[in-house]
Length: 138
Image: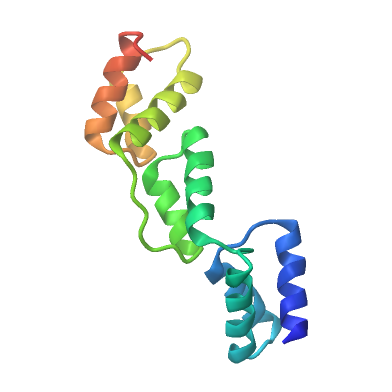
């Protein structure tokens, strides 16, 4: 178990991992399932892995980059996080942020709608974001 714990701590010293990601890494390294479970329980007890905090931080960082909730949910699903909720305001802020940096000169309604739709934003958010953007209410 010491080798598995040591390897997990080495991984966590470089970046944060979701529990499922860490389990996958340990499994691929060849550690038995029992050792992996014990190691993950130890890390949880010591508060070295916390999926809830990491999910919130991941959401916040990607929303600030203008990523859509659909994109973020997809990425989190691949990391082992199944249920993630976004508020309307979070999605709207991400869409407005993205528009602010993408469209500085040309402002055509159909082009902006298509741009946001292709990035996975919901239609009510697209409508409000485009209207605010075109009216200068950002």
